[in-house]
Image (cartoon, rainbow, N blue to C red; front, side, top):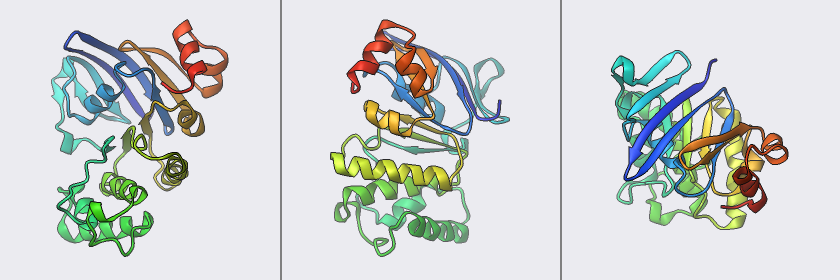
Length: 239
């Protein structure tokens, strides 16, 4: 199928990840208890950590295939990445932070794209401010703009809203829906918030102890849980 397909194996400090799944042009939520391998999965997809074995393919492009000796570095992988702590550089302005996301693009095009991102993400007038001088929601928008300036083929989100208060989380859920409409690409979101998952997800991928326990729509996971643990996750709502 066209979309993102992964099969990943990794042993880290007594923990073993062995997970495989695929998604199309949709928003998929990786959901499960802390320590189940969700963020590790994103880091391997992005090329920040090398799997012990497996494959990562986006559409017709293979970025990692251990058996074939393929392991593209992060800068050659067509993924945008928004970290949990956003990772904005405090010594750089909003404009410079956004441009930093596209080091391989020619300067003139880079500036042009940055201006487009600033307008698209409602950051006009904040270009010369530093992260300490803008609000939490504006920081979120700047982080998304930096991740998307490269025009990636997929977007990886590692709990980007976890530090926000509830009203701002609700606002950013709507913002992410806007992003989905503007950039029709696969999105993988790690979240601990079941309400967030149920609001945003086209597909939920439930992780349990380094393995995929269930893949399905919200309705399928809620009404037809594959195990007692998945039932518990659905019942607790927030883990």
